Length: 118
Image 1: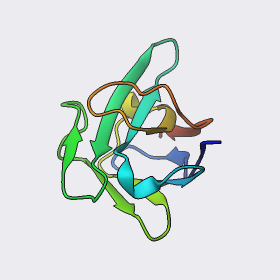
Image 2: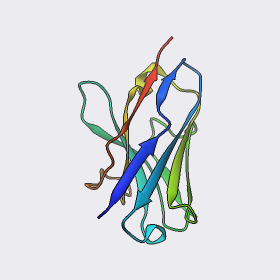
Image 3: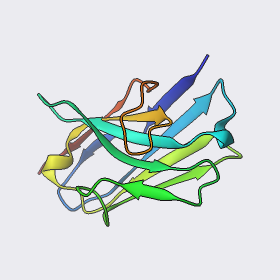
């Protein structure tokens, strides 16, 4: 059974930083791209970023490019989203997902809330 557990969300002021983590189990982690998607209040799911299986290639939505960095540690079956220069419009529930290269993958965790507010 695929399990994806996010952590690291919280309340941060505009301009601040947060790092999200996603612990994965139930599949061969290193063989899959991993991604992050988010859902802002009252809006649909938005794909954010993805990283390939060995971590050598990454891709970002235009809305976060240059501010967010995705990474992974295959030895720990974990991937990360470092978020800098956060804006109020980044407020959302963030989900990690198995797969999802520039699309919203079906297998996702339960999400972690990120709120950017002063």
